[in-house]
Image (cartoon, rainbow, N blue to C red; front, side, top):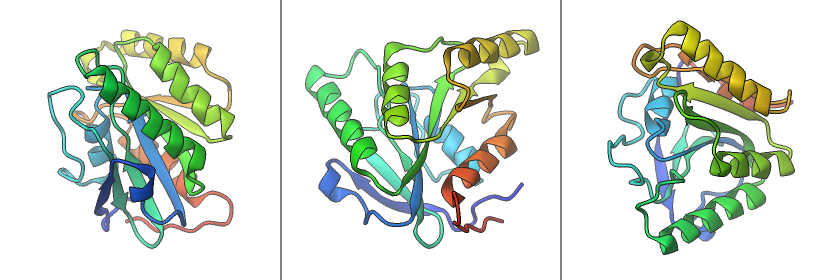
Amino acid sequence: MAQFPHAQFLKSAWAPEQFPPDRGAEVAFAGRSNAGKSSALNAITGRKELARTSKTPGRTQLINFFALEGEYRLADLPGYGYAKVPERMKRHWQALMSAYVAQRESLAGIVIVMDARRPLTDVDVQMLDWAHAHGLPVHVLLTKADKLSRNQAVAAQRRVLDELPDSDSVQLFSAVTKLGVDEARKRVLEMLRGPGRRLCAR
């Protein structure tokens, strides 16, 4: 499956007025802190250091935008749900992500990144509700699946599927073993292309 040879960091945004021009199409990656968002984004694009990874939960405090080609982008949203982040920062992140999902006309879909060993949380459900309220397709990556046995991983996928509407898709994923990377990349491309859109990857 093709990768994204032209992917590069575009800019970071602390507030909506700092977002890139609202043209073309972009897919956002969202998820709890330390769920593996940046690693997933790097694996899907085939760029090892495109998104900065950290073992410190809550480090990503901005929305980071990555250019693909033309007017196509990926966005790495701040990790949510980390208890040690100050309350004021939590409120800022929530307002920033809410504004992003509500106002961003070029937003073509959301990839929600979850640790396969953890159940859906209230903040995961809130992100899902935001996406559904705006008619956005959702694809759930159950990351770190390599840390589970095959039976445990399949059971985890089944549990999440049972809690989501049929319109959402769910898959097992591991940035370490590359499990599910091609499937995830294909889904991101489908979201970006949308009806009548064209995006080339190699």
